[in-house]
Image (cartoon, rainbow, N blue to C red):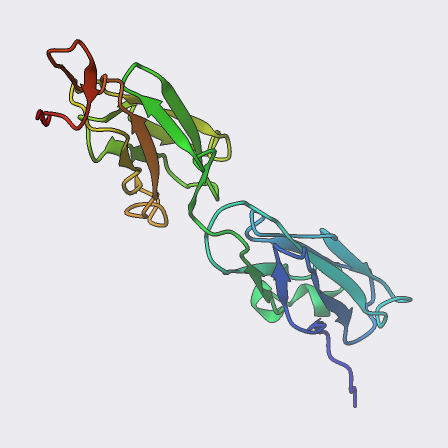
Length: 257
């Protein structure tokens, strides 16, 4: 009575979790349960190469090495996209052989391996160069930069607006980020508006609004805001009195004895 069975044994070696942040790998082993009459090949394919790859495309066993487990390593792929943790399959094929016992096995007779690739990306906006923004009513401008924190799956549009257009205006208010330029700073320039009113320096909020995109991570995501100080260029008011001297004071007021 025979006690051997033609079987491909696939075993996870620890947790089948990889990590984009640490580039941590996972591994599994493949071995035969019995000695084959001829060589046996098992092909190995990652079904999502954008998340993980395998170091061996196939393993081959023969009458000598059939009971020596072969270790297959799964490596993560860092994709820069905020796509959460992704589960995918490493598929193993039915044996390719002339051994009738192993040739009778189908794909369903060989276990696949399920792998989880942990994401390290978060959708967001990065503002730089906005610590101290100053414009003047005389026409001086200032600028700051904006970029995305992760690669979007669709174009992301940001509309920049001034909360007080009588003091500060935006030059080129719309910014569009794509999968090609998402991590490149785009410059946003602000300009002072001359209102001909003696009102001193005014602090204005420039809003970046929310992202508009078919990418659900960025659509509706708040981009932030910055503050701009717009300096007045109107002369301080003054009045002349009989002895020829000049008295400077607040706009519209003067006191004469």
